[in-house]
Length: 167
Image (tube, rainbow, N blue to C red; front, side, top):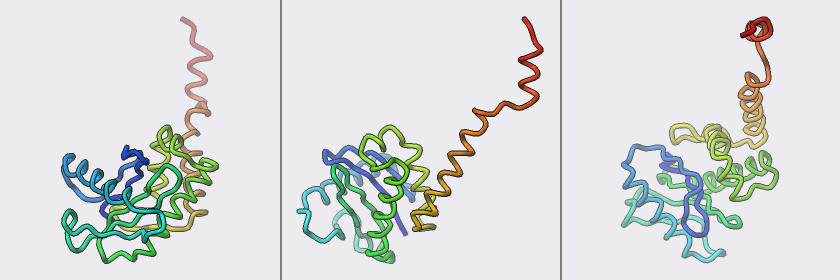
């Protein structure tokens, strides 16, 4: 099971946080700090799978990718495939690229809801639901159309009230 999915910049500032288990805010903050300290000190050529038994325990693994100024990190139990989680991160970044046209840190900062919804299409309750980037992007476009729809369309009833009513 995936315990959390984090996007953290090179300075340790979290940009997207999704926890899939109930823990206190204090524990979340400690997890974010520990994960950043764990992955940021590693050289780029090293393996992207890390364990920290002292903090997480024996059955937990950290899988991450470092792209430009962002670390994409998944904390999961050892029942998850490392390569599967590594691929999940890749698909998430590819989907963000399709949605934002070459995603950068500012896209995630100013579009938190969109980045979170894309992740929600992939992971539900700590379980991977979808890893097809095209399918996720297409579902998200449907959600966007649905969300924009009511704003740009006026119902016949509301149009009649405003047109015929004079104050």
